[in-house]
Image (spheres, rainbow, N blue to C red):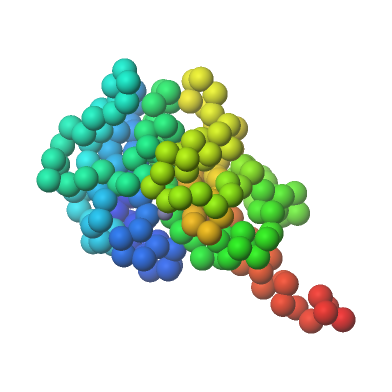
Length: 203
Ligand SMILES: [Zn+2]
């Protein structure tokens, strides 16, 4: 499972969905009180398993348990809030996929795309997008959690949320399942943006 996280970061870098130090992933096995998260600042396409940082969920927040020479991802509050009430396995993947961010920037309401593309709605539930907020902020964490609509048991109404001019956050049981939500949405956004330039739009 940990190798999957590293493989996803390498693939995301190759896809141009992150630059070297962007992106972050957290993973919680069925232990309710701890999870692993990618470290801050390191080149993500070269990350090693032993550089993942273990975090304990405490009564009033979180504390770092391992790799004290490294810092957890700057988006730790986002990951912590998505992990803290969930029981069972969970993975949170945050990337900057090109066409999805371009679609947002072009003013396309991507949460509505699933109505037009059944292959998207069949497997991926898209939350209302978050407006532009400061990266690495409590506000980003709060707005993503709010739009994913998490209940007190940690269950999400949606699988993925996009943040204007920034990226996406996907939640599922495993790294690859979460990644597939991002991949699916990115594919449709590429199609939609390509269609915008077809001649019939201007005839
Ligand atoms: Zn980001």
